[in-house]
Length: 345
Image (cartoon, rainbow, N blue to C red; front, side):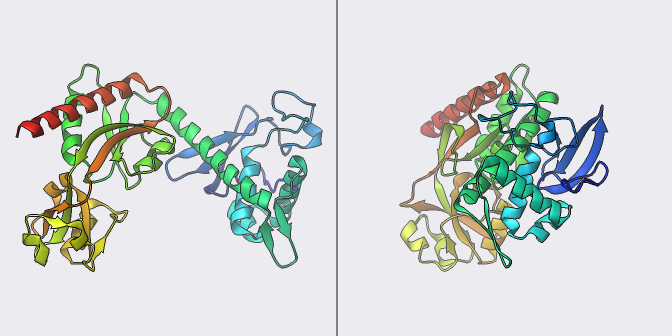
């Protein structure tokens, strides 16, 4: 066992934000593996040796893997150790989470602070707390580890047979989505389409779990490229026995006075939303496309005084693949045809 690394044989822990670790040894290179919620990740120790990153015994001087001033480039393992301690604010708990002993973890954090020349933690005999620099480094470390996870997932997806994964929330733009999938399937050389049902389409895009998503324009699309498709009229979902259920339309001001009214949909499936409405536990405004799936115990009443829901396609920023371009073109054509048909109805 290496006392500095807390490694027994080939086994160690990669990152605190994911489940600990498996192992393999290929052509003398040690790999650290970690399981995220979506896929198995594998990360290579950059220097191909058992020595901890930055150990002076492995420092051959500045080069491509060094920062200005000669400091070795940090490894994901070091960031994972730091994140675990920063989140637990307790070395023993962090060590248990990582699957290593506390003393080597403490030494690894001290070595990290020496390497970057910044104190990340304030330590006393009773407590551990983050410094201002530590808080900044925590946010950046989480982002860096997430970026590595995303890079691996996207590379793995790129190596698979061509397909498009479309993230959707149950009930969102159901009519538009159905027409879109049918039209795209008839395109020459259309890629197979797989639907990923989720309550957070933007997260699926950022994590690389989906290629494109149908979402509401109100979603946080920071860093994503979006294409506006259509606007859905708002309807209120009400129990069939509710006094407002027989109205031809209901003002939003009146809905807000209903005890069960919620301004936003809870992050659950449409089926659960409908069940809550039917039981009298929820009144909520949704896009009109959801009305086709509400059953007999719930009524969809048009809402007056509230803007409609704008539906957009979202994808990761950058140059889209030919399949994504074709899917986006098809979506815009379908949306235009539906708008023209609605205008002549």
